[in-house]
Image (tube, rainbow, N blue to C red; front, side, top):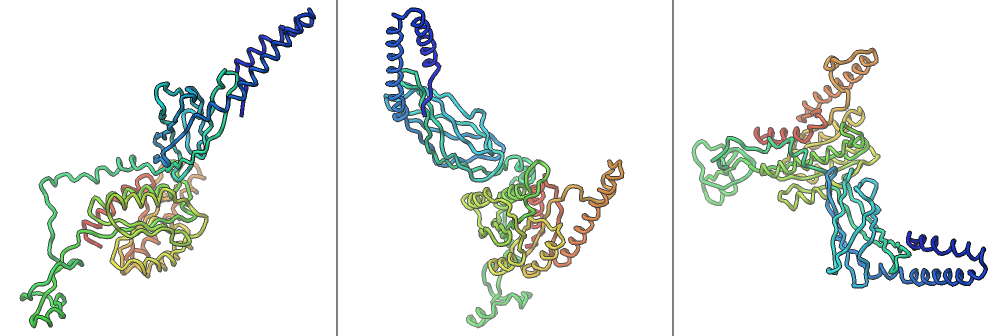
Length: 441
């Protein structure tokens, strides 16, 4: 697209009206006015024809994909390659997604005269996590004589991967990562009644007959005992509910699922630091993601890539299908940390019934973010009006139902906790540390 510049408008204003008025007063000046008008039109037409060539000599490249973090300032790079005939000054506009803001949507760029390429950083801040794309940019450059500006769109195809911001959560749980008072300590294996086999040895008086390896004893013609060591590495799975209730907003203006995702990644980092293997399961009305427990930076990156695009789905969770899936896929005893909402009576009953399939084999911790206003009736002392009292009574009834649900799950060997939405990551890390310290897995 082509547009006239201020220079062309100024020339036209200076030349055409005065000579047209002069020709009206003095007829011999009409020839001069016509020549000047034709000359201006000819020059403008030639300059307009040459205007597209300015951007043909300019190339735009990008790195393909950029990683950003929600709520933190980041940037992506645009590389301009210029031929000698290419423009030095141009305007660049980026059509960013609505969830990504930039201080300036249009920027003036001046390329160096002595370099064939130049790279600029475009600052931006994302307000939502997920996968977004910058499909095109708009370039604008002046024609050779500066009478026109030529504007065109260029396809870009830049992926903007917005990950959750873990920095604030890491600061909340930083104290849990510090191992003070352990200077000079070394990890040692201890023989005991753990689940991990270590070696075989000859039977000694006092050994339990349950530890006798009868097949090896038959081959050696004397009793042989199995020696176990206490397991130092466990499998920890975070099971995230991405169904309809995960779309509810919590303090801070984020969804429940956003808090789940951030807490899961923080727990994964903490579990790896403690020597455990971390796995990930997401579900709604079906199992969406299953990543078997492993450790290492590459595995953590895989979990993060699976989570940053996870969005709430308008469906009811299917706990029966989930527990049947876990029953067939997880053979080794593991710690399963559920992040879900059970304040719906139907969902609570479905969860209680379905988890009977796996409760005996695995250690299950169920965590739900405390809904706003759900607390004992006399915990809030700021209630003044009668409407406030009715609201507190409603919250108390809901809190009582959740407390009863926790008692039912506790009798089945399942721990149920109501957590503060702001401190959910720190609470999960504490739960994991408690399980390791008490060797419950």
